[in-house]
Image (cartoon, rainbow, N blue to C red; front, side, top):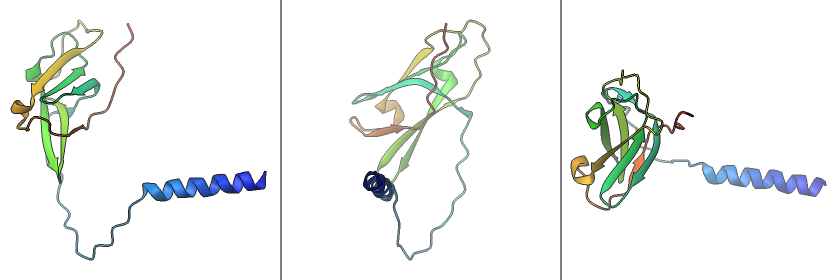
Amino acid sequence: MGRIHTLGVVAVFAALGACSHLSLKSEPVEASAPAVMPGQVEPIHAAAITRDQAVFWVSSNGCTSKQDVTPMVQRRGGEVVITLRRLEEDRCTRPLRDGVQLQWSFDELGLRPGSSVTVQNPYQLPPQG
């Protein structure tokens, strides 16, 4: 039993070691203030990225449209990150069980077809109806 316990501990430390990264650069790192972005980060129910489209499903009280949400596109090194931000609150009183689908072409987002994209929004289950 002691041998199995020891092997388990070694496996955990090996896994943790693989998750960490240590940078040994001696150059100073400049801190920059975070960019101010409009609206609030929008939780999403789902997202699908195709070769030239970004499709999202978000909550709606019955009045959410594409104009109420904006995709913020950031380039971080060689990576493209999209964050949906809600500009206008949906004050209607007819919640849509499945939310609403919003989509943008890569052309609208200023991206080349086939670009690799990461979505940086929290995931939220649709409300149970």
